[in-house]
Image (cartoon, rainbow, N blue to C red; front, side, top):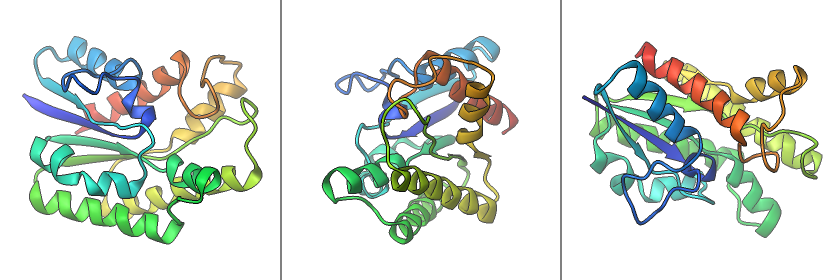
Length: 203
């Protein structure tokens, strides 16, 4: 049985009960588990360790407890929006250079501790027009996604470009993609679930 760890911030957390380690939340992580269990009964176990409000530095701070000690066979990682949001809201964000450095540090340490792990990187996204965001915020979220894409390319990791998924769905008239531009509504959860399941099944 392969263990799949889904790591990130509130988008991954998905309202999970933090007091119950087995809880997968209510959003895309739970749907990934359901889809893979139906398609491949008994082949996967699932862990969700997304924490609301986390930035890249917060994940680095808990790397031992919430990644390495869990010894996953597969890990997905989506983090970046709060690195921007924390700066705009309380001047405590993570600038691009530091974001990239800490992202690489996480991957280096995880690979060293778990040499057989398979890692899937997911870029950040936003849905314009749902809530008021300034141009600087939007461009910085895109910048973090581009950093992750480059890291994935350098390391040969699968990369999920989430922004085009939301853009294309919105253009085709799909509703209920996000609650507030960032947190996925039920259609948005399906987009993320479908993309991640597809990449996991390729491994």
